[in-house]
Image (tube, rainbow, N blue to C red):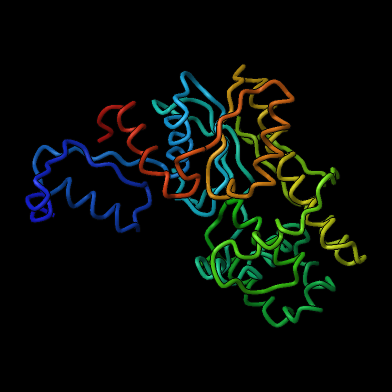
Length: 321
């Protein structure tokens, strides 16, 4: 670390990194902070950085409602976040809502094997009755069920997540009848391509207030998708209905948070918003409801845009540690 600083002839006053303790960048920043006198350390929550990056890019002033839909990010409660709603500014964000937590059986393995998320969402929605579903037996997953159930029940390599990315993985696996992915978000990308234009139907879902935080309950969505698959509904309609549902989640959550906070500016960021259909639909619906919506236009909505948000937060908050 010291050698690198000397080589670059740079001695920063503050180093900023992600909150995740396992990231190389976090460990590097910690080492820099410890080994070089006077260097301060600022750790920033992943999804707050996503929102801050869009705020900085658009030069937004004042507080906003931030929607961060992403794959994976370490949360301040130790769980894996990724379907988040915030209020505030880079100086301070408050988590106002999120998608409900479900288990990720197998942890990172679920990214390449999205059938794991499919089973997890089915278990969350149907409980022990899920194993009786035709969608499980037809795909040969009855043999996996006892192990998956034990992993989830006992928390064995099955962290909890609120990730919108993992929701897309699980639902895409169900609708497309595919178990594996060659790369992250392969199945959600395939699902987006099936969405028919001009289709407006969506699934129902519930919002619950849990100790002042709004939580999106996904059970009715999974139940309805499972029913539609079993009755042979066209995959294109399923894809459209699911995408419209996610857009509706954004609208209803923002409306509820906006009513309470009085905020009318909305920022959308995170890897899931690479989905053009979802982003376009959510933006149009929000604007029709009277919100000013900000998205990325130059800086990436993926993790490539995170450093800008980290810098914006560090600057707004001063020295974090």
